[in-house]
Amino acid sequence: MITVTVTMLKHEIRQVDVSGHGGDKKGSDLVCAAVSAITQTALAGLLHYGKENVKHHLDNGRLSIEIMDISDTRIREIYSVILNTMLLGLKGIAREHPRRVSVVLNTK
Image (cartoon, rainbow, N blue to C red; front, side):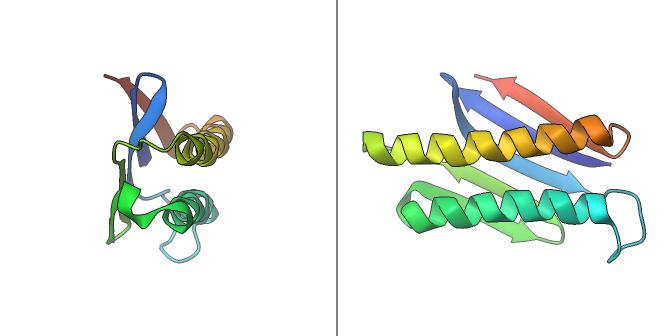
């Protein structure tokens, strides 16, 4: 199972951790590929608007994204749109494939 853990602070997504595998044969798992495409595209968008605002690590099918404190309101809004759009896509996949993808929301 793929587990996506999203940590929110004051209604803002601050951290995303993705781990696990969709269950089909490695290299041909469309659910896993969809989750990877959504999360890695979101990461690319975040990095495009400010590498200094993001810590990330991608290794062996595991992705972690951490958002630093951002004082620029415009950048915070852009990050919010990117991350919330990512979350919508992941929730949609989890609804379609509940035995293969789990999205867990944590609030601090």
